[in-house]
Amino acid sequence: MSWSLIARKEVGDSIRSRQLFVFAGLFVLIFGLAGYATVRSARRGGSPGEFVDLLTLISMILVPVAGLSLAHEAIVKRRTNGQWRLMLGLPHSRRDLVVGTYLGRYAILAVSVLVGTAVASLFVLVSGFSLPWRALASFLALTLVLALVYVAIGITVSALVRSTTLTAFLAFGSFLLFVFAWWIVPDAVVYLVNGLEMPASSPWWTPYLEALSPSAAHERVSDAVTTGDAGGDVPLWFATLVLAGWAVIAPGVGYLRFRETDL
Amino acid sequence: MPAIELDGVEKHFGDVTALRGIDLSVERGDVFGFLGPNGAGKSTTIDIMLNYSHASAGSVRVLGTDVADDPVAVRRRIGVLPEGFEPFETMTGRQHVQFAIESKGVDDYPEEIIERVGLEGAEDRPASGYSKGMAQRLALGMALVGEPDLLVLDEPSTGLDPHGVRRMREIVREEADRGATVFFSSHILEQVEAVCNRVGILRYGELIAVDSLEHLRGTVGAESELTVELAGPASVTAVADAVRSLEGVSQVAEHDRERTLVVGCTTGAKLAVLDEIRASGGEIGDFSTGETSLEELFVSYTDSAGAKPGPGQRRPEGRARADASRDADETSDSGTESTPDPQPSTEVSR
Image 1 (cartoon, rainbow over the protein chains, first blue to last red):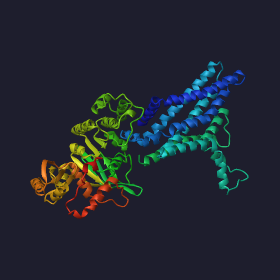
Image 2 (tube, each protein chain N blue to C red):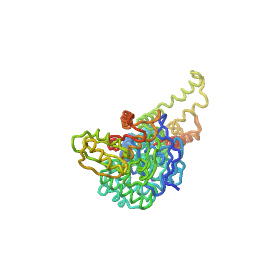
Image 3 (cartoon, helix red, strand yellow):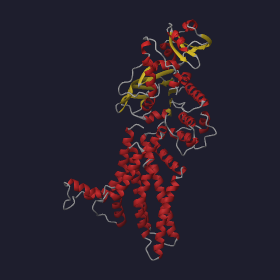
Image 4 (cartoon, rainbow over the protein chains, first blue to last red):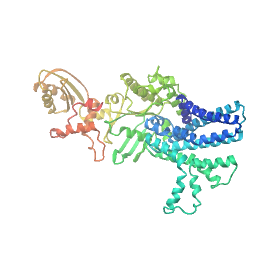
């Protein structure tokens, strides 16, 4: 169980370097603003249910940013500064390093999300409004999944390449692509496959392609959970599988590459 | 079962060949010095031994286990002082040692280790503020945790002050007395000479000699070293040339500034050397004799033995310069005799 020692060291590093406090503080601040906005609008007769919608909206951007920025340097930086050489002089395997780093960094983000949500919720409660507990609970669960997936992508990028500049570039690129630009991809593929012109009706697999983005898959699962709507363009199981793939298979590929290369 | 067995280990980086087939066996209990100039492939070999990098061909067994198959099993029984590492930036020296103790699952006392490597007083400071020498001490301490069967030390004296070097030497001796095998690389020869019972010399990715120190000294053919300080006006070079032609003299190093000759010769030729110096017009101010230092041994090996680098071979600049000067007076080289580098100390221990 030597990965758990690595994971604990990651969390310990984060506490000792105050990084955890910075991230938790960031979430407290931004989620807190959402809480404040909710309270203001509720005093004018709005519904406190907006609170969770607001948090969901913010998290769609904030969580990928935080996850990628926490994870994208995690492996490559210790490779560059030689800390893995020190670490692998001890009885750890490279798999321990990747798994421990992944879960350790995830714990940092998960704690930040939890603390941010707790503080903002408390603010709403203290201001005299009730909270939509069920919606809040599903928001938390789903956001923790989104966090896992984006930490996984950061770890993957970090394990794949040898240069910190390249990882920063790839992390930023995957953020833009998955969060903002993915909707272009299915259309572009259809356009290319169809001989550079758009067909009258989209092929059946376009929605599947669209759901390959972790953010899109997450949205699909969120919709199913919050509205209870099991139908949609793609089956729920597919979106779930996509999320699992990003969380497990991507870092797995990163690990295999990391294992095969020289430190 | 040997502690380390390398079997035909090769390493290529693109079309550059770093190791060209290393066969090496280090026995249990040996203190093995792995020598070679910068860029010879010492660290590459150690990286492959530790599974930090992967051999292009060949295999490595450490304590009977193939490192590529089960690196963790190997790491459980060895202690490593790696080259080119930075300490963990958020942890103190004590926390580093504590982490090594937890990693190895033993119950050593951090205080003992810290005192042993001479870091007492600095153990509760963040290791990111340590000097290079302190970081070396710290990593050595981490390597010592859990009484490993084999210590692998890559250039352990890097950045150490004389006290640190002495402490390092003492620790290597203590570990060897405990029964551990010690494998360390160095380009600084006196340290190897002081503690090792066996030595391997690596050059241009080839192991050109593996032997006990006594045998290596014998192979070079110079059992003695004679240092002569010249008085009077005679030219050092002229005297050196005269001495060089004597039978039994294997190498002559000139130090113009100090007006000193260092002559490697058979014990019987010492008097003849002194006579020849006087005969060629030199005045002897002072002289001393001693055993051949490993330094001359090393220079004579790395300069004259082994193949010249192939087309794809890395060729360190310092080496290239030394070889160029050798090529210039190659005509005066008479087969068995080799002209040593005139400034061996600055060349190899930079």
